[in-house]
Image (cartoon, rainbow, N blue to C red; front, side, top):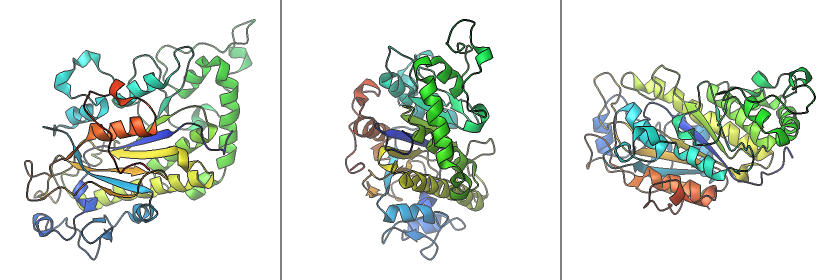
Length: 386
């Protein structure tokens, strides 16, 4: 029922599109090399939101420092992969598939979350196990082999009258809904196919909308990511069995986290949107005792270079931090901050393969077998989940 803890764990993935500057997100504010390398972009001890005597968060992220202090934020440092690409599309494909490009024929690829969705679905019935919430089509990470993953902009867009289909749309003489139009990725179309569960889904969705009510506009900041997370919160309340959600920040076609020039203001605005939106989502779920069943994970296709460019920005890099957020994480820092004197083409080196993070989420959170979803050899991390 709406408002009750979910029976199954839910994963919410937030993509930071464009290559997030990890060094100005989790800031080594006491490192002289950092300060010398970034004459205009450096964030000093008087500005940073200190986490310990060496590291702090960007000053636009007080909402994340609060989560950190509450033990709800785990920062996995130095995440990347061997010989990582610095091309946006190629790097994103690596992160989305979990299988490096040279190892699989292009036509045979599915997303790592798509394979998880396929694994989690009951082959004997139409099942909803994943959804993308946002303005674009579902990302490659959600590409499946046999399950439809819907793309959702908002509940209001497709449930304005509180009905999944009208009586006039039903085939004459039957109680069945019309079949899904070929290729229609909407949640409505997916639910129409799930005949046995459609009426229950309708009731739960309407209850979830009513439960959130006026709190949506009051509790969430006026950011696109916040509104997408508010929609995800509604769907979690509805308890439709969706276990994997995907949202994006920075993918609006204006560069996002690809901060080659004039980075300071743009990066700060994006980090504020991430922190404030996610914190509102956490508070919303906590208020209804749902946070124990939800884990939020962020990723970006690569970090940035140590040295700032002549245009007061940074170039494509390698390793960067990932955030894990929820009441079941082990709050704090996981792994060492990468060295700034041992670099990979002017960028911090990775020490934790991103597929070990994926394995942690699959094995320890979603209770799926990562060896059936990822290439072999990637053990889950310790010190991330309680």
